[in-house]
Image (cartoon, rainbow, N blue to C red):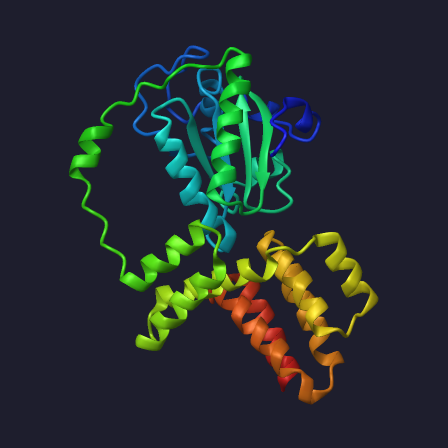
Length: 312
């Protein structure tokens, strides 16, 4: 289990520049007590509003989820964190931070890779976990977080205003197709092979199912990195620079950790060093990784242009 201890991040995270910084036009709130009911226990935090988040952490522990739209593991982990947060009924606040849109927060937390989840107790950061983890572990760490928060005098409950009305007005989410629901259930239980099989069945029925295509790419990545150890993988890749599988392992780990350009660069460097008849798997893996990040992402555009120049 993750060590929930403020000492574990001492010196690693500097939030001093974000303290007491209200959002533009927002009134100042008394420390430790939200001035008015919060609209939801899940909020989007920004560089401008994070001072208020720090103040709320004097009342309840705040879980900070650092994520990005292009990050496949983030898309698997974030819904689990949100689900568990809501189950605590105001005893925990979840602050979601888009690292691409909020560079100061990303720098303050020194987010070397994402997803990265950190808690705040009375303004002090404490570690939770880095990378995608199963729901069972998320629940264990949340329970430990509440215990540590109570030991530090942070055991309040947020007044939630208007949540029921919003829930009543919100349109019901469309029901997932059966194979997609099967894939999601398998992902939540950590059975990535079963999730892959479900998405593949969905694509056999409808090859243009974009949600299935995206889901399959993400879960394949999670399946490949499951059980890999970063330092061992890097050592193996360094020892055998032309070993395609060894380079694939490190590229997958880099992408899963948010180091997109490193992942692309490793495979693009490998591609021209291989005999022509051995290059196809590398090209196909690059195309698959491009799909995970998105065709309009500048890093994908640059990498695709370089791949094109290597092909022709």
